[in-house]
Picture 1 (cartoon, one colour):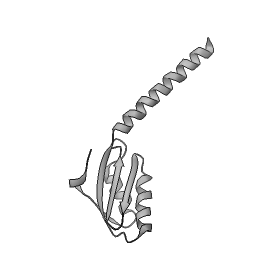
Picture 2: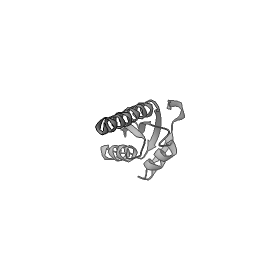
Picture 3: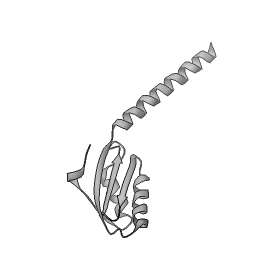
Length: 103
Protein backbone atom coordinates (compact mmCIF):
# COMPACT_ATOMS: atom_id res chain seq x y z
CA UNK A 1 0.00 0.00 0.00
CA UNK A 2 2.86 2.35 0.75
CA UNK A 3 4.26 1.86 -2.78
CA UNK A 4 0.90 2.70 -4.35
CA UNK A 5 0.69 5.95 -2.40
CA UNK A 6 4.18 6.97 -3.50
CA UNK A 7 3.36 6.10 -7.09
CA UNK A 8 0.15 8.14 -6.94
CA UNK A 9 2.05 11.14 -5.57
CA UNK A 10 4.67 10.81 -8.31
CA UNK A 11 1.96 10.70 -10.98
CA UNK A 12 0.28 13.80 -9.60
CA UNK A 13 3.59 15.68 -9.54
CA UNK A 14 4.34 14.69 -13.15
CA UNK A 15 0.83 15.65 -14.29
CA UNK A 16 1.09 19.06 -12.60
CA UNK A 17 4.52 19.65 -14.12
CA UNK A 18 3.28 18.76 -17.61
CA UNK A 19 0.32 21.13 -17.27
CA UNK A 20 2.57 23.94 -16.01
CA UNK A 21 5.03 23.36 -18.87
CA UNK A 22 2.21 23.50 -21.42
CA UNK A 23 0.95 26.77 -19.92
CA UNK A 24 4.45 28.24 -20.10
CA UNK A 25 4.80 27.25 -23.75
CA UNK A 26 1.57 29.11 -24.54
CA UNK A 27 2.69 32.28 -22.75
CA UNK A 28 5.06 33.49 -25.45
CA UNK A 29 5.63 36.76 -27.21
CA UNK A 30 8.04 38.02 -29.82
CA UNK A 31 10.04 41.22 -29.71
CA UNK A 32 12.23 42.62 -32.46
CA UNK A 33 15.08 45.00 -31.70
CA UNK A 34 17.06 47.20 -34.05
CA UNK A 35 20.67 46.78 -32.87
CA UNK A 36 23.32 49.33 -33.90
CA UNK A 37 27.01 48.54 -33.74
CA UNK A 38 27.22 44.86 -34.70
CA UNK A 39 29.87 44.36 -37.40
CA UNK A 40 30.50 40.62 -37.63
CA UNK A 41 29.35 37.10 -36.81
CA UNK A 42 31.08 37.35 -33.43
CA UNK A 43 28.92 40.33 -32.52
CA UNK A 44 25.87 38.40 -33.66
CA UNK A 45 26.82 35.39 -31.53
CA UNK A 46 27.51 37.55 -28.47
CA UNK A 47 24.09 39.19 -28.64
CA UNK A 48 22.37 35.83 -29.17
CA UNK A 49 24.17 34.28 -26.19
CA UNK A 50 23.45 37.28 -23.93
CA UNK A 51 19.75 37.14 -24.81
CA UNK A 52 19.43 33.37 -24.42
CA UNK A 53 21.04 33.51 -20.95
CA UNK A 54 18.07 35.50 -19.71
CA UNK A 55 15.45 33.39 -17.91
CA UNK A 56 12.33 33.27 -20.04
CA UNK A 57 14.04 33.77 -23.40
CA UNK A 58 13.23 30.73 -25.50
CA UNK A 59 14.97 31.64 -28.74
CA UNK A 60 16.73 34.52 -30.42
CA UNK A 61 17.60 35.09 -34.06
CA UNK A 62 20.25 37.77 -34.51
CA UNK A 63 21.58 39.24 -37.75
CA UNK A 64 24.42 41.75 -37.85
CA UNK A 65 23.76 42.34 -41.57
CA UNK A 66 20.17 43.40 -40.81
CA UNK A 67 21.04 45.06 -37.46
CA UNK A 68 18.23 42.99 -35.97
CA UNK A 69 17.49 40.69 -33.05
CA UNK A 70 14.18 38.80 -32.93
CA UNK A 71 13.42 37.21 -29.57
CA UNK A 72 10.78 34.68 -28.59
CA UNK A 73 10.19 34.86 -24.85
CA UNK A 74 7.85 34.32 -21.91
CA UNK A 75 6.70 37.79 -20.81
CA UNK A 76 5.94 36.46 -17.32
CA UNK A 77 9.66 35.79 -16.80
CA UNK A 78 11.52 38.47 -18.75
CA UNK A 79 10.75 41.95 -20.06
CA UNK A 80 11.82 43.77 -23.18
CA UNK A 81 13.69 46.17 -20.88
CA UNK A 82 15.74 43.22 -19.58
CA UNK A 83 16.55 42.19 -23.15
CA UNK A 84 17.47 45.74 -24.16
CA UNK A 85 19.77 46.00 -21.12
CA UNK A 86 21.44 42.67 -22.01
CA UNK A 87 22.16 43.89 -25.55
CA UNK A 88 23.38 47.29 -24.38
CA UNK A 89 25.63 45.71 -21.73
CA UNK A 90 27.71 44.45 -24.67
CA UNK A 91 28.19 48.00 -25.99
CA UNK A 92 25.53 48.03 -28.71
CA UNK A 93 22.54 50.34 -29.01
CA UNK A 94 19.18 48.59 -29.01
CA UNK A 95 15.76 49.94 -29.83
CA UNK A 96 12.55 47.95 -29.61
CA UNK A 97 10.81 47.96 -32.98
CA UNK A 98 7.20 48.34 -31.86
CA UNK A 99 5.81 47.75 -35.33
CA UNK A 100 7.08 44.17 -35.35
CA UNK A 101 6.21 43.06 -31.81
CA UNK A 102 3.79 40.14 -31.65
CA UNK A 103 2.19 38.50 -28.63
